Image (cartoon, rainbow over all chains, first blue to last red; front, side):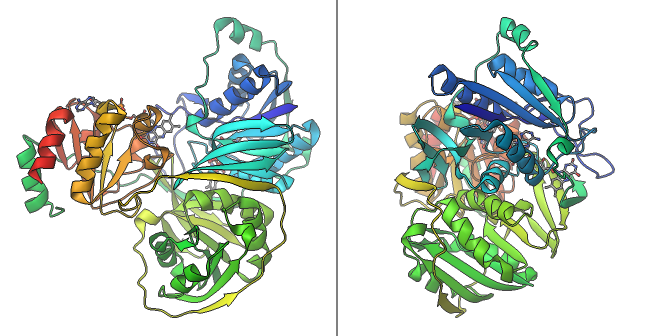
Amino acid sequence: MKVLVPVKRVIDYNVKVRVKADGSGVDLANVKMSMNPFDEIAVEQAIRLKEAGKAEEVVAVSIGVKQSQETLRTALAMGADRAILIVAADDVHNDIEPLAVAKLLKAVVDEEQPGIVLCGKQAIDNDMNATGQMLSALLGWSQATFASELDIDGDKAVVTREVDGGLQTIKVNMPTVVTVDLRLNEPRYASLPNIMKAKKKPLDEKTPADYGVDVGNRLEIVKTAEPETRKAGIKVGSVEELVTKLKDEAGVL
Amino acid sequence: MAVLLLAEITDGQLAMDATAKTVTAAKPLGDITVLCVGATCAAAAKEAATIEGVSKVLCAEHDLYGHRLAEPAADLVVSLAGDYSHIVAPATTDAKNLMPRIAALLDVMVISDITAVIDADTFERPIYAGNALQTVKSADTTKVISVRGSVFDAAATGGSASVENIGAASDPGLSSWVEDKVAESDRPELTSAGIVVSGGRGVGSEDDFAMIEKLADKLGAAVGASRAAVDSGYAPNDWQVGQTGKVVAPDLYIAIGISGAIQHLAGMKDSKIIVAINKDEEAPIFQVADYGLVADLFDAVPKLIDAL
Ligand SMILES: Cc1cc2nc3c(=O)[nH]c(=O)nc-3n(C[C@H](O)[C@H](O)[C@H](O)COP(=O)(O)OP(=O)(O)OC[C@H]3O[C@@H](n4cnc5c(N)ncnc54)[C@H](O)[C@@H]3O)c2cc1C
Ligand SMILES: Cc1cc2nc3c(=O)[nH]c(=O)nc-3n(C[C@H](O)[C@H](O)[C@H](O)COP(=O)(O)OP(=O)(O)OC[C@H]3O[C@@H](n4cnc5c(N)ncnc54)[C@H](O)[C@@H]3O)c2cc1C
C-alpha cells in the first residue's frame, strides 16, 4: 500500500502574525515558514505505517509556491520516500483554496492510487479545516477526521476521533482519507544524515495545468483586519482582593 | 433566498444553544428551514420548531443517521440543497466533519467558522488563530457556512414552525460506528457556560486537577484545559480550549497555571472578564487578563475555594 501525505508550508506557529497596513492580508515577507504542525503528525504516522510493514511507500505532496520544496525536503528527511510539488502560485501571499487543493490532490490520487491519504486536520494559517473532507468527497471515499488513533486492518481502518463530546471510534472502508489531530503521535526530528539523504530523494515538479485543474479562487478577500486587542488589566495582591473585585467591580460573581 | 440550517443533535437531543445561536447568525440570509438528522430526532425537531425565526423544520429520522457519520448525512443534505441559497451549521466538530464534504459535492468552497454576516455573499472569519480577521466574498451559487457560536446570542424560543418528516437518502456504505467514549457530567457545557475555570500544565498532575474541578463546581462553572494539560493526561480532550479545541466566550474565564500561548488565547480571548493565576509575573496570559494574581496556584486555589 502507498500512503499519500499532503503537506502545507505555513507561517511558523511561533511567529507573531502581523496584518499588512493596507488590509490586503497577513505579512508573509521574510517570516519563518515551516511545515503545518498537523502535517508533521501526518508524515510521522505515514512513516510509522511503513515501519510497521503496513505500507510500502510514503509520498508527500505540496501545493503552493516553489519554496514549498523546503517543506517537502523536511518530509523526505523525516522518512518519506518521494515528493511531488505542484507549483500553483508565484507569490507566497497567494494561497490556494481547499477546494482547488482537493481537486489537485484528487488528480494525484488518480495517478498514484494510494490506499490511504493522511492530511492534517487544519492548516494553522487559514484554519479552514476542510481539505481532507473535500478530497474524500471528490473521491467518493470514506473519511475519518480529527484522528487520535489509527489502526489499519486489511480493507478497513479503525479510527478514534476527537469530537466535542469526547472520543468517537469508527470503522471506515479502505481506501480512505484520514485527517490527523495533535494527539495521534509525536513527530520525530530529522537527523542530520537523513537531511543529507533527503536531498537525493526524488522530488517531481508539476503545475496545475498538468492535471487540468483550475485553481481560481471562489472566495475573494475583501479585507484583512487586526482583531480588537485586549488591554492588560490590573494585578491584584491577594485572593480576597480578587474576590472583592469580581463581586463589586466586574459583577460576575 | 432561503437557508437550510443543520441542527446540532447528539443522540436524539437538540443542542439548543448552538442551534439557536446559528439561527441568529443566519436570520439576515433568508427564510430558515431547520434540518434535523438522526436515528431518533422527532423530539429534537419539535424543539427546534420553537426557535423564533424558524419557518419550517425537516425531520429525517433513520438508523443510517444514528452516529453522525459524515458520508450519509452529506448525501442527504446534497439531495436537498437545490432549494437553498445558503447551507448553514454551528461550527461544532460534527459540522466541521460534514460541511466541507457537502461543499465539495456541490463544487463550492466552504466558509468555515464565520463571526459576522456582512451581506448574503460576504462574511467575516478569523484566520491565523484569531490574529487576523478576514472579510471574504463568495462567488459560489450555494454558500456552505459554519458559524462560530461564541459571538452570536441565542435566538429566543416561543415560535411554532411546522415539522415535516422526510425520507432518508441512500446508504453510501463507506463507514460504520464502533463506539463513543463520552464523559458524563452534570457541569454546564463548555461552549455555553457563563463561567469557565481552566487549568494548564502548571497544575502538575491529574490528581491536582481535581482542585480545578472543585473550584469550577463551587462556581457552577464548566472546566477547561490547555493543550499541555490534555496532552499530559490531566484532563480529557473535550475540555481543550484554543485554536484546535473549543472556542469559548463566557462572562468569566479563570486561567490557572496557563502561560497564555496564542493557540490558547485563540479559544478564550473574547471572554468578558479574564482572570489569570500564575506564579510567573511575566506570563503572557497577564497581557489579556483583567485581573491577574501572581501566586502559587496550590496556595491560591484552595483559598479561592474557601472564599467563595
Ligand atoms: C475566502 C478566502 C479567499 C482566499 N483567497 C486567498 C487569496 O487570494 N490570497 C491568500 O493569501 N489566501 C487566500 N485564501 C486562503 C486560501 O485560499 C485557503 O483558505 C487555504 O489555502 C486553504 O485553507 P487551509 O490552509 O486552512 O486548509 P485546511 O483545509 O485547513 O488544510 C488541511 C490540510 O490539507 C492539506 N493541505 C491544505 N493546503 C495544502 C497545500 N497547499 N498543499 C498540500 N497540502 C495542503 C494539509 O494536509 C493540511 O493540513 C483565501 C481564503 C479564504 C477563506
Ligand atoms: C498547531 C498547534 C495547535 C495548538 N492548539 C492549542 C489549543 O487549542 N489550546 C491550547 O491550550 N494550546 C494549543 N497549543 C499549544 C500551545 O502552543 C501551548 O503549548 C499550550 O497552550 C501551553 O499550555 P500551558 O499554558 O498549560 O503550559 P505552559 O506553557 O507550560 O504554562 C504553564 C504555566 O503554569 C505556570 N505555573 C507552573 N506552576 C505553577 C504554580 N505552582 N502556580 C501557578 N502557576 C504555575 C507557569 O508559570 C506557566 O506560565 C497548540 C500548539 C500548536 C503547535
